[in-house]
Length: 193
Image (cartoon, rainbow, N blue to C red; front, side):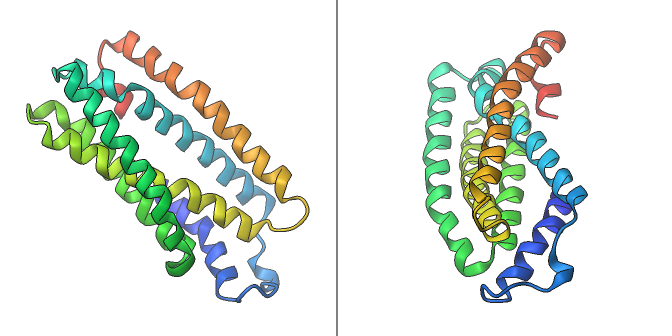
């Protein structure tokens, strides 16, 4: 998933290298690639919403006390805010590099949450909160900035609105799906996979 998203976002890098001038004809993405990117975006949002909505319950299921799980959630929120602020660095270092870095850090964080079951220490859940929070905090704004780079013009509002609508659907489906998978399997292991 990360490789295919990076490939699609490579097109944004091409536009950045042309200093705001009209990019060459070969730069334009086909409608099919745009649809794949939108589909990937929807799937990623569903997965992220599962993690956001269920992380406290997941940690409690793993044996962490409620206060420790809530503290991890608070650190996660601060890390997201920090990621939102540092996403402005994508203007300097490039959208693709920053988006891929943020996504990779978020994936490492989610893997740390998955590994939390094997340790009784709160160090791993805190690392999850910092990595996943910062990664998710940077990826969203960087993605939307890249969309603005790619789809600037008078129809940008409709395109941005469509992306936000799909994110809202993921926000509704993700928590429900995570709860359903937990109810069916009795654990969050399958949900985090």
